[in-house]
Image (cartoon, rainbow, N blue to C red; front, side, top):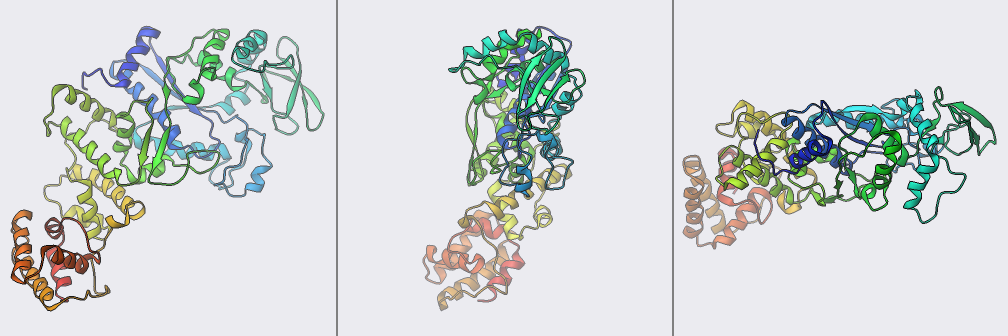
Length: 523
């Protein structure tokens, strides 16, 4: 591993050790409510924690990486992308773990969203220990925590009121209850017996009940009390949060004061910024259903480059995940980072250390023994289009490809083809003409020039470099009295049905001689 200590993950690892002292075990935490599709903005928190976990482990520390599914939260809104919305509507105000999965893929709505994430995270090297809060609450695991909150009711209220314009009233309690009659949280707490007995009323039915915190599945702490209770219980040393939680007076500010009532202290934290999407429609919002998930990002970016997007950006910096032409530059930036790591691109020592650490943290499972096959992404896209998306044909056409490189390049080819098919601008796309293509109308001189070009391709294309062969393209123009630009336009129209295309000599070299001669023989 690189000894560089300038990457933000290493800096935070040092801060955790410094502030929390030398410990047998450090606990790093992340979590989310699975209220809808878990989007790429949520992934920023998961990957940020994972990178700090890696940095701590690189320093020889034992680390527990926990990910909490807050699946005992209330189902507040039906996302647009869910089937049977009318049925789901009847479950509003119930815990999301009791809502059915109308896609039929899991035992409940929350579990469906959880499984989507749990299945994909290992592919980007993220393997946390999952904690399911519904299971924990419903088994009364937090009975003592809830009792502690009730004992410190007035002190907790005072903390929360510090940041409120409207103070909490006398009827406020630091606990909420799902009704045993309706499963909804539309309840009012009436009394607490000073120990484990809590009496509430179901506001929709008027029924009253006293529950025992040690045996009930219905009591739950609200977020600003639940979060610090769990920090104390799990001994959390590090947990970042988004702008909403880290804003002044937000849940982090209140939680770091409330945690002391549970005998704990606030973790080291940082605020991560939002992510926007470029070149693809849709605002990121789980509850609206208009989201970009990790699955969507991995359609276009390999797992390493997906990690690279986050590794190479400070968490407090807003950035866009691009699906437009920026994709070409992102692949190029990653390839340069890889070249620097393997000493194929000389740079100054400071840049080298920085890029090496970024490369290490971008890898899914350790650094490969050799660099990837260094082929520009744009050229790879051209090859895929020449071969109509046949990945094996593209890989077979490349010289010096090792088995290890082939495996990695295969993944990149799949991403490149998905990008060409779904996101590349129209002017970037092409397909080689075939017998079903409409012939192009050409003059006699142009026809003669095309025949000359066909002859040169047959004789020289495979034996000359791109630069050497380009002389024969110009010779076909000159010998037939055609302007270079006009001839290039004709060649592109004949080959791909467009007036422009990839750099011509390189494009011809990338195509198979047989295919080119076959197309040109029609003229």
